[in-house]
Length: 592
Image (cartoon, rainbow, N blue to C red):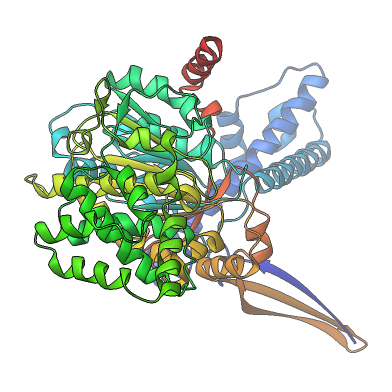
């Protein structure tokens, strides 16, 4: 005896008509059967009419009566000879069968073509579940709730609805999904998988309010800076201490402005220590070095000395000035701690100061310090005004030790905090228009220590962060496993792009997508005859190997409370502003 098995995935164990017949309502079942019978009869009559007319035309008698008249004649029992005079019935039947075969083959070819380009969606979220992210009445109601300034408008621009994500399903012409103005977005995409062309550029250009952008390359700035200035008619700021874009400095940001408490100083110090600290490990001197930097930063802020003074104090363990400033401003305990440390064991003092110097290495670079040192002739950046405007800020830094990355993280963090404060003082508790923060290369140059925690409430304040990482492992290296898991869980929109080579992460995504029923048909053959049986088993909708093999410009969308779904990312080259972006980039090249 031999056994063969065929596996077929289906969304219903009752077959394609399971949702119609057997509904439990005899009247409904009769109507469905009547509809099917009528359709089949009409289709068969149409094929007979086409066959008889063709033969009559070949015989020189013309095509004959129309379709309606032919169907009525056939219904009254009139044969082919009576309808097409002289055309034999057998010939009509043979040609009708041939036409039927041709139609069946054409349908099969069409279905195969469609399935190759539109894979089955069993187990994925349906379009009806994503109505709040798609254009329509649901999206309009939601956007007017989140942005009261749009109420009463008779017409809204697509960019008013939210941040563009990609097209629903696997079709390149599907409807465009948009994150809402209360979503917080996390994108995990390998290099060259479309994160800049499909996510960063469209989000920047379609943002209705202020925009913050971080990057370690000039490409995003090249493609969007000029257009943002032209579209908003408001200022575009470029904070580029390491000349990634070769932009001339025309403003400064006072990193110590507003720092007057120990908590504020510790938050800024944490950005420097985060650059040398590994999330899952702790150096012996890390905690003491953070305390030291906190004290020096607070002393510099209270005295108005500027960040460069911190680097000077770090070179002298016996410096008395910062202790005096702290004591004079009421921080006597902190001053006593510094005094005690200066008289401690030599090895301890040297270890703590060496760690602090390594963390704050960029403070010794005059070229970097020039961007955070206010001076005559330079405009002073005002974060509180910026978050309520339509302005744009690009924060750029190179990677590696001594880079401006700690200042990039501190600058972005300050803006997010100021945006939260501004939102808290509005009637709705939200910014309108919302602020969009595109944190590209976040794990390399924008390691905001508190980012996982911030994600839990930024969306409720009209602040939409889009954090772009190259892998989950990269995020865990910065925020630790617990921090990265918190960030992943807090993100209401998660995009998993091509190039996921972490087998554990790919399997986790596969399990999150879930399983679906698969029908397995088994046939047995033997001397005593054969038989067939059908069983149902559970299978992964998208196995881990297929998660890894996602094509470029394809992503998996995981939205809170909805089954995941594949989407097609839309490169800006295929978007409505391709010509504008090309023109802006060409003009920049010509100017340089």
